Image 1: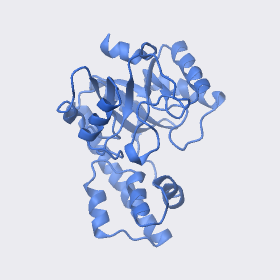
Image 2: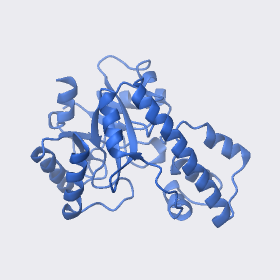
Image 3: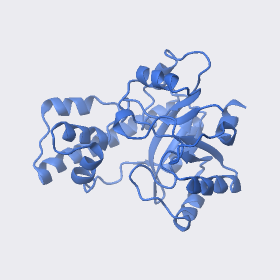
Length: 281
């Protein structure tokens, strides 16, 4: 049974591992098919191939932070051309949006919590290719203000209103396709730390996402139970959507092990991942 993981993050976004370290972890884990899907950046994907060993299949990917009509969502793009003008233009826009969000959060920490970041901390944040709450939370943990980054985000950052700085979902899907990629709805029932959607809550959102042009669902996910996965697979098959799966690995910035595709940690037959068939035949 082939081992795969199609949702991995490096330190080009909010993972803890360099690209080289991530590839070494992939190889040592026995994974033979993987994708790098950093948040709103493709900075690491061309570097991956320098470290690959024989027998490893790599998929160039990205995870775009979006709002599709009224749905906040993350959209994975698989098999993208990282040099696509449409994609690079969108990512440049994203950098400006994230900088805007970062400035709002920095001001919020100062005004509400009387926490002023040092020049060294600010320089580090501004040097990142893709800044998210985790980066700020890690600084707060280092200061001893919280035991872990999840608690730090909940206490100090979750109530900060940053406005809508997400990509338009329909535009993001179109750009992924223009870059030669396949758009897949990431963790569609809810991501890390989010309350999972019920069947009644999910189905209307699925209809909207299909209308927006989504081609697949991330059905197999480290935080989903077997029953949740079975429900998502049924929805994907009913609507002729591709099926994907990934752990959402972030290294030490998240507790999920690499290669885990459900809460029970049972192995998954790669033939069930129809996205792989679409990509490799």
